[in-house]
Amino acid sequence: MQRRHFVKLSATTMAALVFSRVTYAFGDVTLMNNPDEVWGQAGAEWFQLKPSGNTGFVYKDVEVSLKTNGHASGVYIQSPTIHLTAIRLKWKHQTNISAKLLGDQWERSYGDLGWKAPDGNIKNPWYVLLNDNKHTSCFGVKTGANTICWWAVNPDSIELTLDTHSGGVGVELGPRKLHAADIINTESTATENAFATASRFCKLMCEKPRLPKQPVYGINDWYFAYGNNSSKLIRETTALMAELVTDTNNRPFSVVDAGWAEYSPLLPGDGGWNETYAKPNDKFKDMHLLGDEIKKLGMRPGLWIRPLCARHDEKASLLLPKTKGRGDPKTPLLDPTIPENIERIKRYFDVYRQWGFEMVKHDYTTNDITGKWGSEMKDSITAPGWSFNDKSKTTAEVINHLYTSIRVAAGNDMYIIGCNTMSHLSAGQFELNRIGDDTSGKEWARTRKMGVNTMGFRLSQHNAFYAVDGDCVGLTTDIPWEKNKQWMQLLAESSAPLFISAQPEALGAEQKAFVKECFAKAAKTQPVGEPLDWLTNPLPARWKLNNQEVNFNWG
Image (cartoon, rainbow, N blue to C red; front, side, top):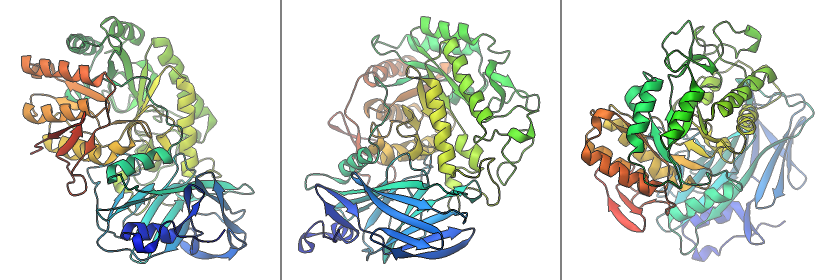
């Protein structure tokens, strides 16, 4: 195929010019040109692959090939003997320093998203958008990739790195060919603004999202109980909030958060670390009964779990090895490459189905596997040197298998919320995904940072990847009501899920009336909200909600 410019250069803006230099027209779509350079990494050493044929690059027995897969450019990797840690594709182009870029995050965001100046040292996970106030160009990989991918935009190049680590070492592919990722791109049309282009691009990256049958809303106890919960507390708060529900065709959820499961004898009373998620502790006793009581009160029961927790006396052969960020002997973790461990996790869902629970929120898996939060992955995804029991799979493949196993175990009638899950690998697997770090029932500044920022810059993923969960309204006496009221309104009118974590003492007549109003809105299908000032404001204050402009004062 010959290179062809996607648009006439004389008619382009900066972003379109960048797009035309690294893509070519292929029927009614655009695909990436072959990269100008391909590099591989083994350990810490980089080596350059040389062109071979029309679409291949080789170094010794390492081969990288590109193939057209529908609307995408598939990247395939073979490395029979060299244990690869990464492959990097590089396209040459000059980037205008006045451009603004928007990347994503590995898992949740941490109040750190926004349109920023190009910086080649910054990794843009999964996708990157370039905007010059007139035009938006988009470069990404399709969801469900078998490598962990990021983009870098330099003054003279754009690069895509495909991380092929297996834990903290290079993957041992042996004779198999790895379908590493599918590269996809688009640019804005004449009638689209940047948000519309971003939303459309997210749909292109995820062809088969798994979405809730109806809008999701409800309650969660975490941001007022913080693990100090009980079946009595859950019944009382569910009854209190159920009085504010008016839509009987779409019932809300009552999610029992951390604190319900059997404690580890090494960490008695710790709700965030448990011995097993198939047995409740003495504060709950009968989860089947609790599930039935939640239903009788007019809500649907949901449950929080941390699936990779191991028992305090677990066999060492079933555990992930100790490494930086993951080595406390009181908190052993299951290796997800061991089939016995996957089967244990799958059996949990058989138990929850018997109890009658209709939603499960699973948490911590990215941190448990890598030893890092997404905000700590600036230099590397995980510490070097450690390996899974199965070294033949990339970390992305290991995570994909874990997510697929959870999906299969949950079946078609149970919703799954991913929390601290790799965002691009969650898409198409789970109905909901927590898109930002924790909000708060204690500090408004935290809700503003983590909640408002993540909604502003990830709402374009809503109903494209999954239903985006911006986290709860921590409705407590510690947070000013005039602030929480705005946060509740944004969630309720954006079409994203609304979860309220309400301390009973904070529910006066005014609060109850507004919660009732917001529940009614959140139960209905609505247009996806749009941040109107997101190009310049990291905490968008101007929003288009239900086709009306709403202005917030986040303070």
